Amino acid sequence: MPGQEAQQIIERADASLLEIIDHVLNQGVVVTGDVMLGMANVDLIYLGLSVVLCAADRVKQPKAPE
Amino acid sequence: MLRVLPCGSLVAAVSDVSGAPPLQEWSIREHEQTVRRLAESVDAILPARFGSVIPDEHVLVQLVESREAELRQALELVEGREQMTLRVYGEASPVPELPVEIEAEEGGVLGPGARYLARKMGARAREQLVTELESVRPQLAPLVRAERIQRHSTPPLIASVYHLIERGQSTRYLEVLNGNAHGDPPVRIIASGPWPPYAFARWEWL
Image (tube, rainbow over all chains, first blue to last red):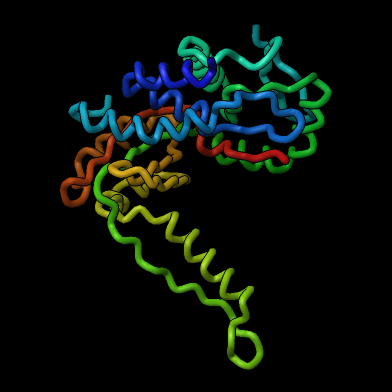
């Protein structure tokens, strides 16, 4: 099920993948209305992202950006 | 396979698909890598959101042409530039109430509509404040060409800040960021990038 897939991605994701997910899913040009055939679980993923970005910060030592 | 679709005076990079992309790690990474390769090969790019699917070329061409002026403006902003992303963690500082001047109606009393507008403008202005960045903002200012801010209601993640900088300046940007205090603990700022300018392509097409 799409919701389970999304949750599994978030639970397995490291910090770098979470950043990728946030950029490609939360930003960018959006085509809405009748022509939008996107993913039904985008909002669910984003809500999960904010929580997981916080959780990742709690368990990982911040490293110097490269 | 990607191909270029002329849309008036602009072009779109598209691929033919049978439906929305699968929501899996490999497809998300593939999309990001594709956008990154395209960004490296052009001076200006507006990434589309993952999962955006159009029924046919004609619809896309019409959409792009109908928004050409706005798209050109956005492309001019991101030309030769890239994005740095900051995640601000900590306990949110109180955001001050910002005075918003609304002309009083005749008689000196604001009507309900004006009061609503004042509240909304104040809330929007507060949304754009990230006081936790104030200790480093003056040093970053010479490098930042544009800024987008998204506050969060999920502590300890306080806000996401997106900075548009000239391409090739990310090392300098990070040197400046790491060389300046990030406010009193427990505020932490974690930077990533450079990215293609995702946050500066947030256009909603109705």
